[in-house]
Image (cartoon, rainbow, N blue to C red; front, side):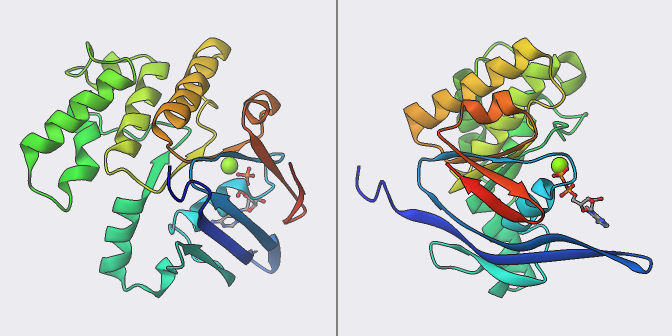
Length: 230
Ligand code: ADP
Ligand code: MG
């Protein structure tokens, strides 16, 4: 495959602090790393290390105090609000610890949502969502609402939803954090399978060593910096 080893994301010298009354918490103190297309990378660190903060900045949901992120040399924070929202919708997929599915919508409709925000081709979105739900093993659950699905199934729907716009990268914040061991393992197997078979790039924030072990690459966040990149 052409450009297989291309850097799709560069994270340069990211700093982020939070003010809590009089106290300032320096969460990120200069974080640098790059991600290549097709990687599965985990960001490891204890609770409070700043993993979610970093992922939110990479996901353009939060601004860094300093430093920049570049997607194929585009700094999304240079875009105005409208363009940034479109950029995020097209280039970045999100999977959270709690699935964040819309309760009134079926699995199929939930997966369609990111696709129809900027595109009114419902039929195409429906077909693609159906295909993706088949791909994540939920072809027979497309009309179930989130409450009618198990925790593992809901996370599979969330993964399908994250894929619908063929994003550059999928950001997963403790994706197995709310699942039992077996369902967590199955979700990770699915992620690895999608990575191997379709080349989907994943960045997974986790405090779980078992999760990071299955990732080809792990970076460790400690005291606001990356202390180890294997
Ligand atoms: P992790 O995901 O690794 O558990 P977080 O990124 O959620 O860590 O949080 C890192 C630190 O920043 C924690 O001490 C947390 O309390 C603090 N923090 C996170 N978000 C905010 C916020 N919006 N306001 C103030 N402090 C925050
Ligand atoms: Mg977190």
